[in-house]
Picture 1 (cartoon, rainbow, N blue to C red):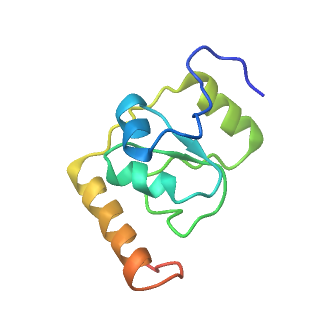
Picture 2 (cartoon, rainbow, N blue to C red; picture 1 turned 30 degrees about the vertical axis):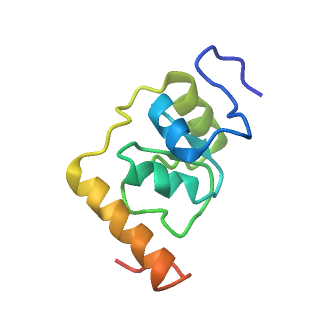
Picture 3 (cartoon, rainbow, N blue to C red; picture 1 turned 120 degrees about the horizontal axis):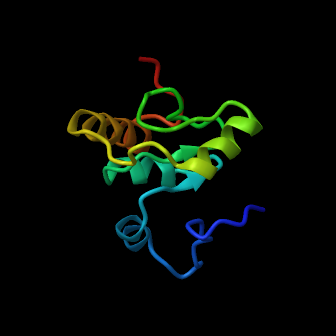
Length: 105
């Protein structure tokens, strides 16, 4: 557990779009919500390996100390550029419609 005024656990009755509008940073272990957050234009923090790991539009701390340093400081811009958003949306489309496997670049 981390005690920080800017870190909140999301209520279970809150929808994704509402979450995305109200937050700048999103932390998820391996959920697809991280990819959805990227499609919305914001950089998620991913704590595990996902089908969209390694494409550059997420923050992926590789150790426990890097993870806690990242979430303690949040010293990166959460905004994705247009190219990153389009790429995240392409990955989302492929994973949702074509394949359930990791895409090789």
